[in-house]
Length: 330
Image (cartoon, rainbow, N blue to C red):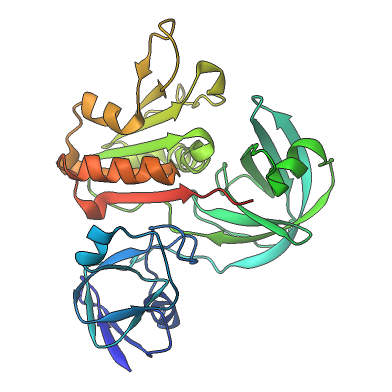
């Protein structure tokens, strides 16, 4: 049995057969996480002292990150006492994951590649989540992960933005075969992509494509309790390829919150008068004080890694970068 010490002086015991994340959860301590399958870097943590071994082979971390003693808490097991450069999630309520039935209420085409899906769940299901989390959706034996695109205070409906992938088993179903009242199952809530309680001034949301889904959910929860956030500046920087790919506009006219929405196109021609390029570069163009900022990034793993590297080299503290990577699965 080994002792695992966190940055905020909390500690817990970890058996050599458990991963760091599993042992923390067993001791009612929640660490950053998302997929829990060694396929994203959300649970990446730096080992200050001690030795670990991987439970299974992973290809997420770069060689440089490994040299700097970063590991994935969902995959690393201790070989000694450990000291980690990470804090737990503190007082944030983490709702227990459950599997419940759901029926399709709405299938709405937003673009050629994106639909809006609305599922209704039983009123007595007691399904709770933090805005920004995601669920697994099951159709028979096929399972895929999708971020919830609406606030928790939306009754017994869950909204999703679904992107079409050629030969994708689940997207083929949703785009070409799904019917109203089809019965599905959902598993969740999952992940730690939600707003933290912080005195930091600037809150920056970066998203690409359907990565806007959890940002939309968080924005709705902010507006529903806006008096808590009147001293902050919010940035929503959303990237797409072409103007036709911008399927969502924020409803921010009737709020007192200081919110700036910046749509960014990477491939649009000269007719586009708005921001061009990549979302992470727009942050620098806006000259936001990154030393007093938190960044929440959701989209492709490539965007997230690029944004993290660029912004952390430009004044953002690494502990203030939170992400949820979308990983394509066939």
